[in-house]
Image (cartoon, rainbow over all chains, first blue to last red; front, side, top):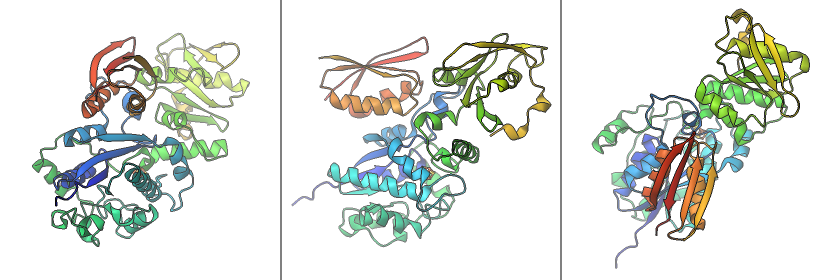
Length: 348
Length: 75
Ligand code: SF4
């Protein structure tokens, strides 16, 4: 009697490791479909859709690209709302920055496991490698993910499976354990060599982590936002705006988000009805959104900061208009703030 | 066959694909969906997603900073 074709769910991040893990499983005759979770913090997306880098190559979603290379279906799942609790209250704490990696892994595997059940698949797998990341991919933490997610031994890690006890797909003979790997450590050499053998070119190589929560400057901005609001919370617009523009806080009550180039200014235009903002009228210059409560007697001061980032920075005066969300536009003809007066501590 | 419009302007990648994917689930074979977006990433991603699921890209145009991609839902 022929065996049924087993079905596996791949957690495809768009990076090389999950691409290779999926290839290993596909080569064993398993039907694989991939899922990719959108948390709002993912690297791809964000700035690629904002910044006006005409020279850069066409933008793409790396998980879609990986799935297409592999010839499998990808399901992209929006988990922005559910994920908030993971970022705000991680049970296992944060990594070096504001990355709740272990909680994040547990959450994603749990979601994938639910998807597996709903869609009648047999097991799930990831591209994790022991020791690749300090917190979430340690040998001791991997069993925690399997257990706490509920996936238990239906969670396979093809790139390092041989370093662990056999999982259900291996014990049942759905998967040949001999064809799985025993990778560990931070070296990327074995993966690069495999990519070459498989003719995978142009794959994504995110450094440091799969999302911006591992980025120190992003983490500082997120913490600043929580601190000044007096609560740990966010919505999708908040976390996207943290990626856009220069963020300066000249006063604890408000910050300026000053566009760095045309693409950012255009993107920020989409927020002009939600935020009070400043525009440079007499010169080419940035759009600056104001987040928080700016006192009336700070308007001119803030306008002079915005003028510093315009083409009129060295001119005697620059005309800047202030646009509240409701109310009248005010015009200021002011001297741009001298560079030395821009306090470096204002930069978030 | 019906024609539908999906406005995903200002949403960044991969939200246009997610919204397209979710909308297509509600549609019938041969229905057309016109997706209006502003993230240039959609120019790569929506056709890639269509190739993966066998849907047909009927037309792609860019005007005034907007990208309009029209697809036909296939089996
Ligand atoms: S880097 Fe980000 S997406 Fe990756 S495991 Fe950590 S928190 Fe999750």
